[in-house]
Image (cartoon, rainbow, N blue to C red; front, side):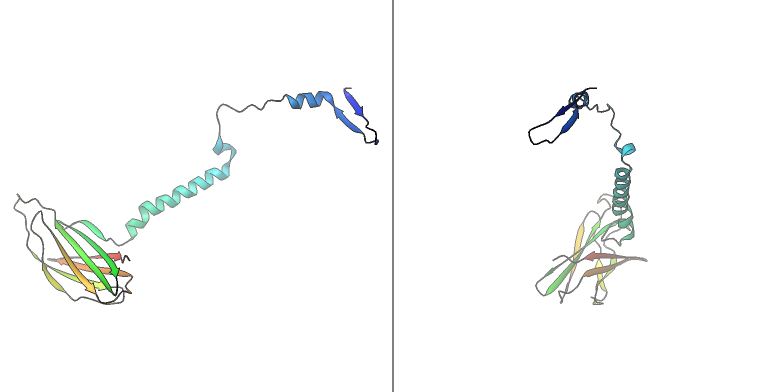
Length: 171
């Protein structure tokens, strides 16, 4: 039923079902109104979860484990360290800002101690400094005579407390 036969001159026979061909020709593919990419494709869900875990690790865990190059509140001071390399020298600078208001009766002008360290055990030795007055900022720097340092450390002591900051040397 509905089968037809076609024979060209060279005796090759083609068979086809005309009804089946007509059904296939007018077939419409219906797309569901609500797409479910995660239910139909579990691999996509696993990949997105992996990416989410990596981003969470990079944004939350790594900064908590890394030694800081900036401290927002250390005994009322904001402290940051920067270092860069140029020519045959490496420059390091520590920025100390007193976060107390000028109007308040807050301590300032105290003595502190700064020691710069290089990653190759090069040190500046302890240097006594006068910490900034309330609302002011001071910069203390040191020049290393080498350009092979990878990281620079600084130890800051104020009274009985001490902190160490670390930064990677920029080119």
